[in-house]
Image (cartoon, rainbow, N blue to C red; front, side, top):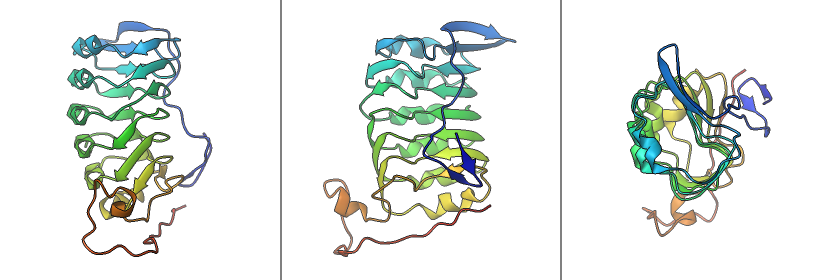
Length: 222
């Protein structure tokens, strides 16, 4: 992908190389990598039984459909590379994925048809140093303030290409200056608009919303 300073172009990043399907130890660490394998159908719930995985779990760039199983939250020993990007997945992101607290790099669920609000529990991934990628989905609602707890993040924080509403949380903006690449506002057309006007069935306005969307500003550091 192309980047200049902290701006990331619309050539959105793809995480991880393409692997032949394998479940093999790597220097004592175990990984399951089946990216770009031409796989179809639903993601098997039984994959949640691979609790010994530590190095990587990648099903990226396939044609999986349906919802993602909550059982994948049992991969609690995984320290790097949780990837479901570029599939035909639908439904919401399970709150249980906030249990993957051993992750230090790459939580990538991008370029799917998943909807709904991003779980606040993802803010529990406080050891994640780079690679939170939730771009190019159909997520909506407010951006969790709990992302501000990710104080170890230094690079590759991507939320663009969704339908988030409200303002970018101050807690998150406070971390952005320490990240090499950070993109939240691009192609998030409802940011700056009160969530209660966009999703009135979910959010209640404390006061009557203005007819003019609220504004915010964000400057990218060089």
